[in-house]
Length: 451
Ligand SMILES: Cc1ncc(COP(=O)(O)O)c(C=O)c1O
Image (cartoon, protein in one colour):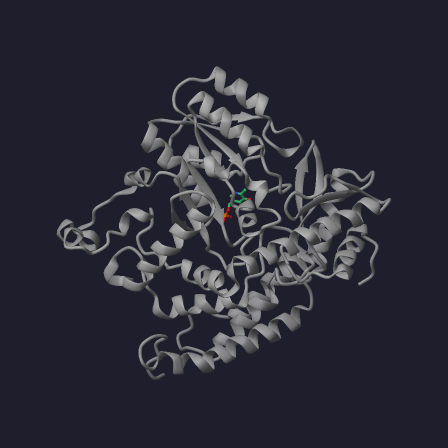
């Protein structure tokens, strides 16, 4: 085999072009072979097809057709968020323009741990992170791999700024928050009740009154289970009154800030010391597209780190930007290129229109559920999540129905335990979903639709 071509350099684009055709053809053929939101047959059938496509993972001699074979297999085995019946998770269908931009990152492979590996990308990241932070009323932001890393960093910055903080979070908080407390060696979190899915301010007040020492309150703007928003202004007021630091996990909800119609729901966000954003949720970015916004850039000093080969003191003094302290990672992709391209291509109003569309689809779906005598609706959506369940069904029946839809490859619905019962969860993030597709989703949840 001759030397394989490279993706960048003068000959890179010419080498990539036919390979991209192969990838695009295989994406098409794989999706056709799947013919639904996810592959039919369950884990065994999927594993068998992937094993078959892979063959010998490390053959003695290469196979020039591997790109087509494996991309086809990946697409055939995908749960495709661009199918409106794939609505289980905060798993958004990425915009084509964002995905195209991401290819440029893979081709050029800049790494944001030192300026000499990413001169342009580092300047771009600095501008874009600051602009996004300011859009939600904070000062600066770090790029992360997603909500979990952002929450982890938020706890780390709190610990480094205030000493051994204790996390106080709602029972509705994302699991990555208590996990980060464990990882950072912090005391066990204090979990405040969240009746009806949002943090109870009276219970928070009582907890903050009873506790002493440095406290970090974590509120949620867009809960994982029901897409609800904690009462942020009230929580911010309590934090001020009790001298507690405030982190808001807006991994889901932050995208509302693009919408004139829905931005108001985030009132109070700007009072936080740190905010988690995640544009691979309500932002239509391919993962990873997380951010941690900070109100006080000086808190970031805790991340400062020297490694002579990356940010030697004399290099920094001579004016080379010092990038190592903007992440816990070393090698790091410029994940914000795709976001910058998206923001510039669609503009705020273009992204806001997508937010409005998915929120409207969720309201319509909730109406369908409410009007259907065979279903109970948990609540009208705050963002784009609708929880519902067949009336009178047991939790086991609800769980089995969801698994059957997965096994048959007909629909991806999520599950959420709320008010002590198991609910089906439709997380509507597909902006082009049509009314008949919403009706089909509900019909499938009846469990009676023939294929
Ligand atoms: C509220 C919330 N925070 C954090 C996360 C974690 O985000 P990621 O999966 O990007 O780490 C999620 C994921 O669904 C979430 O819903």
